[in-house]
Length: 361
Image (cartoon, helix red, strand yellow):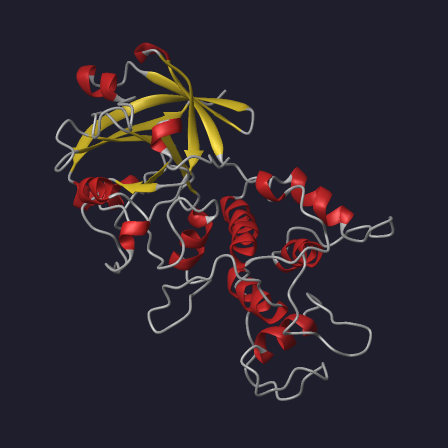
C-alpha cells in the first residue's frame, strides 16, 4: 500500500484550512515550502514527517481521539520509540471504546498500583478477559510490547475474533495468519519476528487498520479500489484508501495513484477523490478533467471494484460546491451510494460532486 519515495503518504489537502491547529516551527523538515503554500499541507506532528510510512495511521487515530502525543500540545508522537505494554492498553482501550469503570480500587497484578495512570485500562481489560499477565502475577507495564503480543491484543481487544487455536509451534502464529488474511498487517511489517519489540508508529498502523475495517463493516481492510468510467476513457484507476474529516479532505499519494478513496460507513457511500486541474506541473494528474469538460448526468455510469466485487453506479446529478461546503460529500440521501469528488478548474473556489446510485441486480 505504501509508496517509499518522497511523496509516500504525503497527505495533500484540497482546502484552505485544517480542522486542527498547525505548529509553524520545524516544518521546513517535513514538506517543501512550495507544497505548503499551494496545498497548506503540513505534518501535524513535530517529530513525524508526512512521508513517514505510518503517518496516515497516526493522523487518523489522533483525529479520532484514540492517541495523543507528548507535551502540552500533544504534537510530539515519538513514532520510532518503543511502546510499552501499559501504553498499548490505553491505545486499545480508546480504539475499542471500552467502557472504563473508574471506581475500581484493587489491582489484579502485583506490579500495577491503583495510583498508576494506566491502572484503569489494565484492570478493566483484565476483568473483561482481554489481556493477561505473566505467570508470576505481574503484568510488566514497563516492558516493551512484542510483535506477537500486539497481534493477540489487536485481535482480542478489537473484537475481531474470540476463538483462536494456539496449540501449534508458536502461539502467535494463528493471530498472525488471521490478521494477514484480514489485511491488517502492513507489508512492511510482515517479516517481523514475533519477539521483536514494537514502535509506537507500528502499533498505530495495526490499530488504525483494524479500526477502519471494523467501522466500515468490511471483511478485510481495504486500502485500494478500482475505478472505471468508460465514457471518459478512465480505466482501472487505482484509488487508495484515505480519510475525510468535517473540514478537510486529504488525498493520499496523488503523484503516484492520482486518486483517493473513502468509505462513508455511516451513510454507506463510496467516495472517490481525484484532481481535475493541474496544480503543480505533473505532480497530480488531472484524471477527472474530462468529467468537468463534458459534465456527467443521468446518461452516465461508472464502476467501482471493491474487494474483487464489481459494482455499477448510475449517475443521479452533478453539482458544484464551495470548498467550505465539504460536509456535503457526506450525503445522507439513501438513494446516493457513491460520489465522485473533484476540484474545479478554479481550485480555490470550486469543488464538484457527482452523485450516483448503485444499479441493483
